Image (cartoon, rainbow, N blue to C red):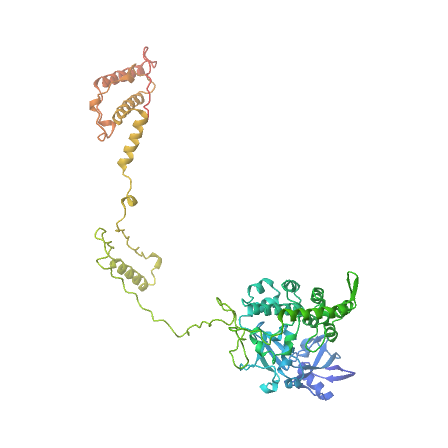
Length: 568
């Protein structure tokens, strides 16, 4: 199968097989055009085949891609430089590549820190660089002194206890910065300058406005950490970098407008290299920032009766500020540290830039000792507690000693036997095994009587009879006699349904002495009926039988007595 390869200005035919891969075709092109390919630490030079707008991978088969006879493939020769160094940022947990020429390894550490600060947005006075072995890189030394090679990985660490604060600066969260500001006044002021520098680099308008209201200026250098004040002469020159320079380098037009409107002195603020914000924007190619700064520099400030150009006003303002500073402070002191302040000197004091989180309960920074935890292998011997034996003198003779019920071992042995039996017989279902319940424990502790006492049934009946006697006006014995009489009349009326009883039947007199007193009354069958009541029942029954045989009408002169139901 013949295909055509277009390389630069050539278009050459190649006879290949359908089972060939893209890598084999690249080797044929390399030998045909006598190309030199590289793949080392410094860079990479390789071939790239493109078909129908798609880049072909080396392990693809031409037939599987759909390349047929007389197809045309485009070949490109690409060069790719590899990073000279890698910097691992302990704050963001990201690796920043340093794309420079190999000759960059002969530069100083200060130049490397300036490049890292530009890429990460962190001021040079807030981090340090170290090798994998933990060796710190100092600004005055060269990278060759630390035997760094192409592809080496460095580590970036910030001040201890600043991790949460720096995270808030990266995200632009004002409330996080307020929470994690230092309790020391001089360290808190330095942190505010750092926060404004990072807000100008990342474009956090809200955070920058809040810091400007707190007195932080855009033309004020970030400076060094108060702990490293004695290393100021040998420190990095980038400590004089201002927030307005960071916004100009990053091309943040809105932040640049905010800083210039807050203080016109930002137009003439120069960085350590002597460049103004306008010159920095011209080097970076930020044309929007350039047009704004040029228009602002040519403007005229109008005062009552005296218009002044901006450059004249800037000179007067700078002179007044210098004079005011000298009057307030007198002669400038070499160092502002006092007795008791913390100092960090390179090579003499303990390193305090290891990206450690803020300790809980810690006061001022650098004060106190860090608590250490015991190793994992260390264990506290466990001591079994012995039962406390009470002295006989402590026990009161009036209180009886509580007696606990005896533990029944019999049921436990029975349950173990049942479980063992079920385990030995696999065919028997375990859910059918009856597992005995634990014994019921009776509470033998002495308690007040009203807690567990239950009301008696006799008490309930007596209370109901007393309430009945109070509302009805009759005693219990009188009410029983009255109820028995009413039940007797009701039984007689149900015996002869439809036949009226004799007049005066409801006024039958009963023998009160024959009724038992309260507590002996059981049923109505035990009460003896009077004799004349039985005679009247016989007569009424005979009359009823005679009338039922002949005439069904009731006898004249007979009326049905009114039976009054008993009350209650």
